[in-house]
Figure (cartoon, helix red, strand yellow):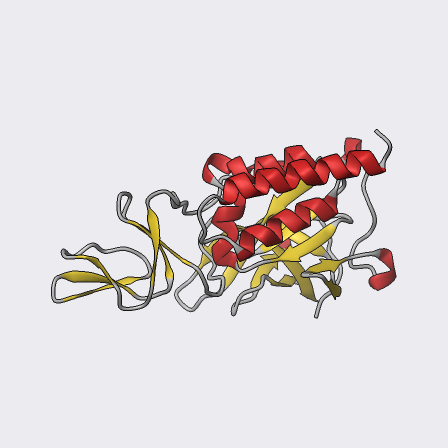
Length: 258
């Protein structure tokens, strides 16, 4: 296991053999990370909880054939192949469980597991490893470095090529089920922006279910993210997260004597 697993999160510090190289001053922050952070916040499939309901494998979604991910068609009717949330109005089905399968242009957070002359192998929290060619990066990475990158290509046998890579300095990593990532991001990045604004933390959400958090009230940010993962399928989640962040921020301010 990479890092120290604690309360659903992993800490990367200098004492852990160099998983993180410490904080970089804000003025020296790599511009590539800022761009990837914005792209990551664009987020995946979003389902409105006002119109969605939980479905199980084999449940009828439509009396007519409607090709869509995570569903199958039998005798002219459409059925769910997963347990998930189905929004009949938009026709979107989002699974509630499952492993991360890389897609083109996904922003992922990986951990360098092998350094080669030709490039780097990264664990991307998937059945498939990612490969970053030395030709596609100006940075040099070391074993154990935490890296944010974009999926450049996925071929028919699931070889995953990465590009636009940048090392993430310091901070903490939280791992959640990748299918819950759209709920963490929210519609038009509303949820993740709410968490960032309330906690003053710098956050990058990987589509692979790894989330990097640095600075601010990181403990509150982690608590909110793990609550979203647990309650992603429930209604009223946005209001409950807002209440958690308000009460948590008030508690932090009181404890600081503000």
